[in-house]
Picture 1 (tube, rainbow, N blue to C red):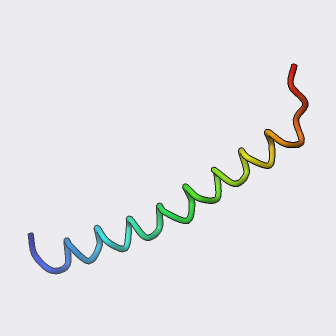
Picture 2: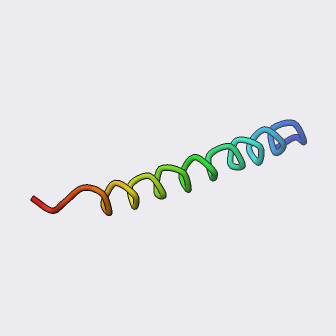
Length: 37
């Protein structure tokens, strides 16, 4: 693996992490506000 590949991989992972956290937070909020059926 060359440096540019490693760099793009790590930056991609950094991009994915906040998104995953964000969707998890949204689903938590939705679970709170959506009454159980």
